View 1 (tube, helix red, strand yellow):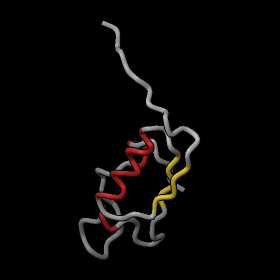
View 2 (view 1 turned 60 degrees about the horizontal axis):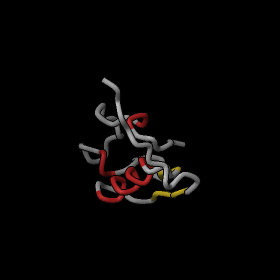
View 3 (view 1 turned 135 degrees about the vertical axis):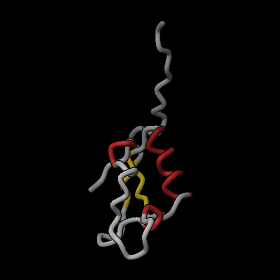
View 4 (view 1 turned 90 degrees about the vertical axis):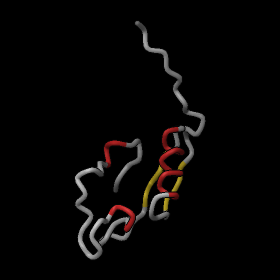
Length: 75
């Protein structure tokens, strides 16, 4: 059985700077990355995106979050 897929790169060459927090904004910019955009997510350097934090005041150490799971880049 052959695998048929469509490569969606309609936003290739577009750069997006993501300053969003919590679920809605990052989900939208993740979709833009799936369409080929280069997304750079800007977060607070000490606490990260508060939407990932399960315990207020603690570092973002949720093992379910992986930078490599999406086509976005981390700097």
